[in-house]
Length: 307
Image (cartoon, rainbow, N blue to C red; front, side, top):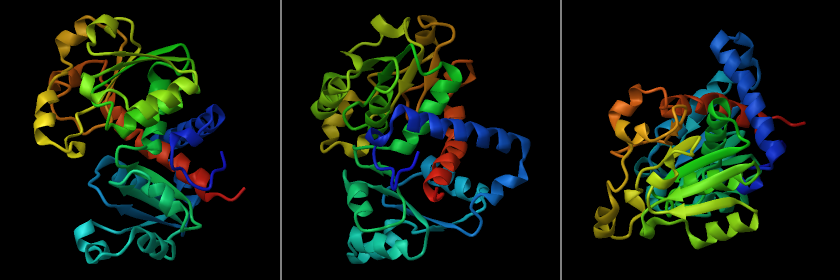
């Protein structure tokens, strides 16, 4: 894979995905064995983190990934402690950060922000989430987790929760069109996939069906990808309350599922997966989060290497 930036899962061909995941598997093995040569990949290089929204997993795993490759990280910090608070534009912010680093990871509440930022800088930009738009590096670690647990071809996946505002859903569904995947989308009617996303999936030849109830499809799933209701995206708190808690996966839910069902979640969760599910062999969401380090190591290595 040789991209200047990673802004959307739409950029990723099957070959691109497999290149990243194969490289991630190599790094994963190196991390497990304590391979000291990992730090020889990008010594002296610097990655800038610009997060205009809160983040735990994405931010910390990019930080860990760069450091495990031998590089360093500079962090803009919270919006309230930066010049953004003084009215600095996003274009000016990223142009300044370009002077400090060899690559930039950007999270922003406005859809399209990463696309705009990439127009102003020459260093690689990774979109770490732009509003309800895309989150392609999350998609890569999701695909890595699916490949490790269920395989990416002849796959039946159920994606449940907030499909309207869930950027992880939009990215993952887009990437799965490159594979032999049957997708079942389960949500309240008010949180269906956006029309534009459905159109793009149909245009890509996706095998998809939409449902308001999980029960009819659960037994046939290889993977259940659970998402939280994106409270921060709702323009109206009353609308959020109408759908909050509507779907919940617990051990009783798993009784109707295949024994080898893989349960995933991009995290953070609120109450959509009961804590007792954590103790089952189906739960892979903490493994999924851990996979963010080798996958983002692979992504940074490919973006930062001139070949």
